[in-house]
Image (cartoon, rainbow, N blue to C red; front, top):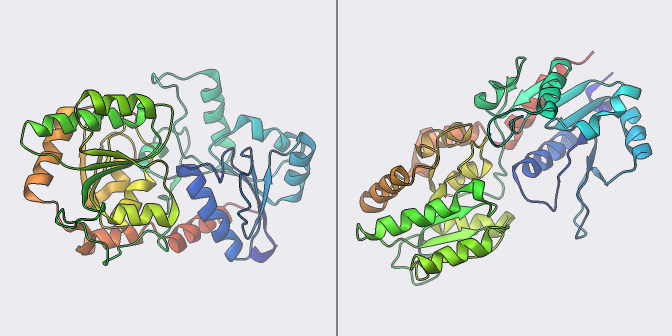
Amino acid sequence: MSVTSRKILIYSPVFYPSIGGIETVISILAEGFFRRGWNVKVVCQTPATDRKTFPFEVVRCPSAQALLQLTRWCDVFFQACVSLKGLWPLIIAPKPLVITHQTWYRRLDGGTGWQDCLKLQVARVAINIAPSQAVANQLPVTATVIPNPYAEDIFYRRVEIRRDREDIREAARELIFVGRLVSDKGTDLLLEALTRLQHQGLTPQLTIAGSGPEATNLQQQVQQLGLTEQVQFVGSQKGEALAQLLNAHRILVVPSRWEEPFGIVALEGMACGCYVVGSEAGGLKEAIGVGGKVFPNGDVAALTEILGELLSKGEPDSNATSSIKTHLQRHQTNRIVEDYLAAIEANLP
């Protein structure tokens, strides 16, 4: 069978218009596979909220019968993380299974339930790919480590956007947080760090780009801590709007409490010229690489110390260094898609 006749079904429970790392990775990979001659169909459980189209077919919320028919149609069944609900058609219509493991298979407290154990066992019969060595290390079998891509056609340095505080536009802000407003992401830790920085005579401006269930609590925290003059909430941002916003800031902060499996936002920030400060455990430090500094998860004192140093002395011009450029090149779309296809093809009959 020639490569151009391959039919691949990508099962991703979440997809556009949902916003997140998995959604970004699957969108980039699906389009990359399609551009290289593969017949691509994406199956998801996310309803459409607009009329955005893709060059490949997207099947949303399919019936059991439709999912089975799609499985029979494909040559390769590709999953974004192990979804037990999406695996059952392979019992009836077995196909080569490829899994990109984009998360941990464990509970929030670090324990494992029966579902987690079963998901890890599924990896034994699959072609396994992990975005970071940290994720690969949790699997019971060897996985090919292929880092996640970012959209370099959207996220890049725009030299016309200034970052200095003398610029009277709203763009003159030092810090930015991008992500879901949930407790795991640690936005409240960043706000606490701002209050500690005030004791050092530092009052950086912070933009919070995101939405989620913690939004109201975070807004109340800003008021209680007396940070209303420093913090601005701008809601969820994506695509070109997010790229411009990142370009208008000096430092991207990713203060997650939990261990991030990777962290595409770090790549997006670096590509737009931001220096990145992020939590250390998990795969986030692999995404940051030489483009920033890390601190122990949940350690507000360490976060404050790093931010204080950067704000006082100035962060390196990360986008100008050859090491950062090399790091970003490793994560560009073409290379990642080619690596995925090579890993898949090498294991197919």
